[in-house]
Amino acid sequence: MAARIGVGIAGSGFVARFHVQSWRGVRDADITAIYSRNRKAAGELASLCRELRVGEPAVYEDLAAMVRDPAVDAVWVATPNDLRVRTAEIIAEEVRSGWARLTGVAFEKPLARNLREANAVVAAVKEAELLHGYLENQVFAPALTRGAELLWSRAAPLSGPPYLARGQSAAW
Image 1 (cartoon, rainbow, N blue to C red):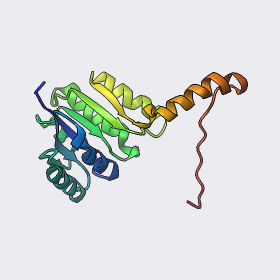
Image 2: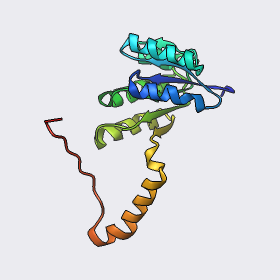
Image 3: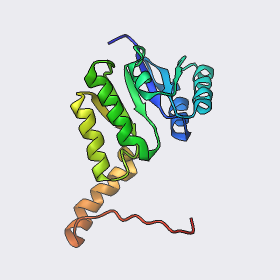
Image 4: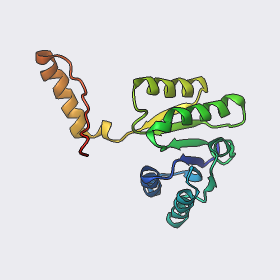
């Protein structure tokens, strides 16, 4: 691998912008490419990269083309949630076919919309034999890890294992 890692960002929305802004704290890596279905948003994100001096990214409207770019060693996936499975499949297909030579891929939270989709994302990435990661900072926050320890050590023995319930009001 090169002395510097080239990272392509798949997505150009709020989360991708957040990653670009935080990239100033990343050593030995540059943002070398941006993929988005929205060329205007991708161009604006590329301009922000240049302004912040975190890379000189090429802009792509075709994910497969970005993944094939020799300047891209890894991909940060920040696409909308409903596109995560297809994004993982395209990346994996390009690597398995030999057209792309990626080292790794990382997915912004959430990994997918449900367990079936999450399993599909993980399967695609593993089949391509890519190093992979999950871009989640809250899992490691001290207050959350301590809360989880307390929940499992004190509450779970009394009331059973915790579960996650989600809901949404039509009024939102």
